Length: 278
Image 1 (tube, rainbow, N blue to C red):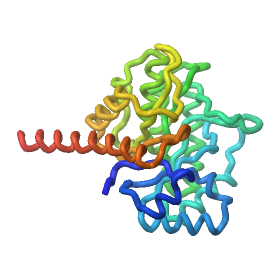
Image 2 (cartoon, helix red, strand yellow; image 1 turned 120 degrees about the vertical axis):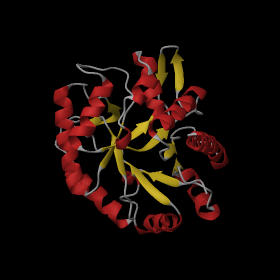
Image 3 (spheres, rainbow, N blue to C red; image 1 turned 90 degrees about the vertical axis):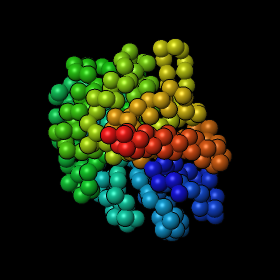
Image 4 (tube, rainbow, N blue to C red; image 1 turned 180 degrees about the vertical axis):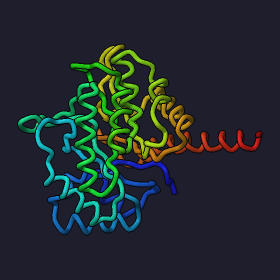
């Protein structure tokens, strides 16, 4: 069974998962998509939870917003995590509200002041959910008010809040092209001990210097290469295949998941070979 590779659980193939139990290490769900669906949906999720591990990836926490923290949502998420015995709650290191929902993930200004502010809000969320919050590095297309590097900002937030990192490898690659930095240096600069799991996805090329993080295409070879480097730098971490648009049939997704697993196997063999050579 594939233990370190997951796939986002989608309604398009939910019935097939129930019937066939495909070899997937874990499924990721958005709690907001399940909170109000009722007992039938909860029984469905119970059945899946008996056979698989689940992680959650939220959509609307808006951790960087100047709006008050939505503690009612956080409490609901906490109850959901407890109900299904789910250890991990991840969200985006961004914001999506400002006097109302903005329906997009926008970058928090890369400043020391913003890092302090976000870390304070993260600590409050962690107090409520009684778990570490796992934050994902996001793709962005402008950096208004930037005073420090993206890498320094992320490291500062993780350290001050004592939270964890969801390393989205495709977002690193997309940002490196759009903002002109070395993605390998960025990956190498992240704290290994903070990385809980990772995301990998496809993107579209609008121009040679403009990539768009769509989650609606196959994973590019360059992104697989960067994932391999991330494993070499930080060890093999559980990795989720993201596909949110133009979702192909489940067998095709399983094929891409197999490609991730082959990279993990190769890294593990490399490590064993080096250990035996010492």
